[in-house]
Length: 331
Ligand code: NAX
Image 1 (cartoon, rainbow, N blue to C red):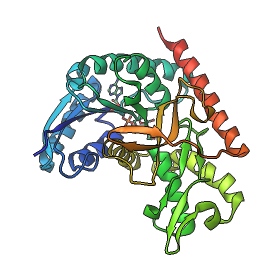
Image 2: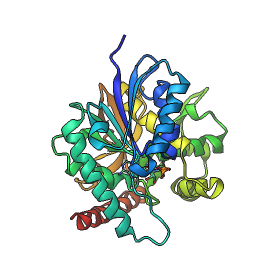
Image 3: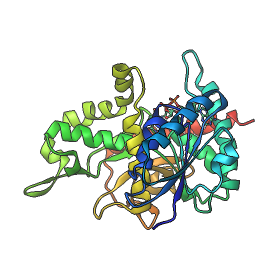
């Protein structure tokens, strides 16, 4: 039998946490033959709720779940973890300035970075979900210099999956037959969902999405805004923000990173930019990536037309501004 993998979920008493921990305990994140030990962190006001989640995990009698640590102590939470999914953060409340929210999150991610750096297992893989996801991940990277920068990522897989979902609905095809969409940039409304290289599996072979949809106007406008604004549409409908889809996408992100992407398929991940596609280095920016042996690499050589170029630059610009704001919030 395999040794258990320790998976940290911060903000585990929250909405996404509640959807995510049973998926991890069921083997959806790391595989149906991979035992796990869950480490759940939340803050003291949520301690009782967190303990309730722990009780439910016990009650569910998951065969793969070999242990549960539920704590408000960040050191205990981070100790020995192999995978860290950072869902905890300070939400933007009505009437709050962007800078105030950023200040709160910068301070959370700065201190959690140090705890991970000191106490996590060597080679721990980190996924930041909490918003502003890209910039929280960047702060985490800056304050955990001994964690390899390639181990720190943020979630844009939900946006990627939303793009696949929209194409599948539009063409009335199985979502599993649609692949190679790309989310470029920030997990925010400036993200660029790009289907210029996406394909659909058909009985006659793989066909470009652009050819099958045959409606550039829809692809260049409504499709893009629908994906960009999907989070807001969910809040409007459900009165709560996306949780099950966010949890599921977080599992997809880690699973593909650890176990690899299928041949010929790429996914979107927020990763530390190296200047690929003329995206400024030093940002956590979402790129198309393939994964093998636990390492991601940016898909190279895709053609970028003028329309796309502008959108890649716009979202990079926003991330540079967020980075500057985050630095101005450091005390
Ligand atoms: P909730 O407010 O339900 O849960 C957040 C939890 O984090 C709470 O239990 C809270 O007590 C805890 N928390 C706060 N500060 C903490 C700290 N310092 N350490 C540990 N835990 C802490 O929010 P939920 O709906 O679960 O969303 C969580 C985060 O995901 C939010 O920042 C949200 O904006 C972000 N999202 C990111 C998405 C993405 O694709 N990257 C999509 C979904 C989601 O909107």
